[in-house]
Length: 126
Image (cartoon, rainbow, N blue to C red; front, side):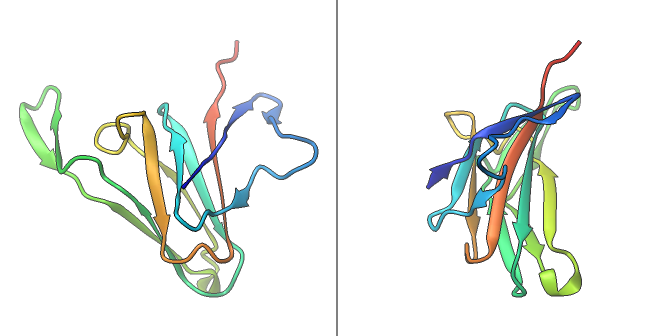
């Protein structure tokens, strides 16, 4: 499993290394990133075959403050089908229920072939 570096987006745009793109190849065993809400995960499918991206739930339910009841949560599955011009997915993953004990989100892929991923967050500006 590879840990994605979370990029910061400020008023000048995404801060990026001049030698590389902000996207990296999806790792065979999956990826993870530190999820300081609101962090955005972007997955791009550069091939033609459909891919499923799974964001693993760390709990089966969470208590919603102010409502006094538990809600059930489950894994998030995203199907990215480049053949249907749906070649990327952008998702903000809630911290409650999806962050592991280290504050990271765990991601796996049906196949990492032709997938590129990145994570970014909004920088504190002003």
